Length: 245
Length: 80
Image (cartoon, rainbow over all chains, first blue to last red; front, side, top):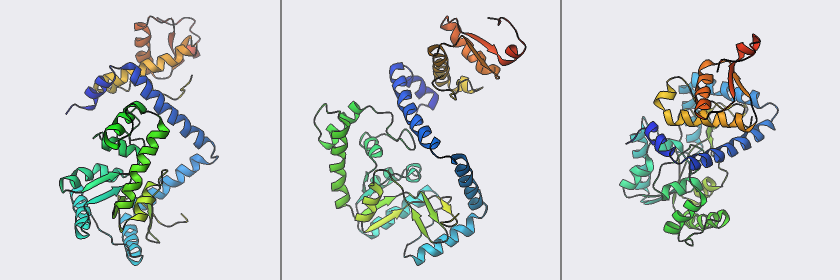
């Protein structure tokens, strides 16, 4: 496989496209700046979040055990995975135990790093990513190009081609509203028919054994609420001590 | 400038190991100055300035590169 520099060199051959890509990302950056500038104590909040993280990392073992204890008393089953392989095997064993061969999944960088989709597909499990950007790159058989904007590298015309091929939209359709509706209908059926949903974890609360999953599309909620089995894959550092920190 | 806090893309060994990205970043950084009517580009870092100066030269641009110390010292004309 080519390294980043070689791939970047090839990408940079089409300068118009590079400029388009750059403008697209800059537009997101401007939106981010606009949002953060509306919060007067933005930097203080960042610093507070950073200190909470440092605190958790300084006593990670105890916080994790506290979380586990509380989570179990909330009726959650807690599994510990030492590495990606063990994580993937645990997910597979849960699905196998419930006789499940199809799963819906919301965005999770942890499972991306574990190459979970690929592993499950080899075991005969069908996985559908329900985040819109993740769904598009999954259909295109590509990895996400960005951790929060997985499909930022694709133009709407290209997404139209992918949806025409996989989801049956009209050939040449590139209207974002219509394409989003196509994905919505496809995903609605997926949510209604899957018995297992996997989500990531944005953070978990050690004191109460709760965990929080945020999405802006409602896809994690839809997946988890409509399934019999909810698997939440969480990195060990995704903890906060309590809800008041 | 439209993007006051953007990097020029030089980055020491970055310009060697990631030549394509480095060159494009420098090109964009220079273009932002040109589009906004800059006559001089200044900075505290010499390698940033060298990187942008190289790009300006290739473009045969009249925009000049001047180190901030030269401004503070009151040098009238920069060495091209």
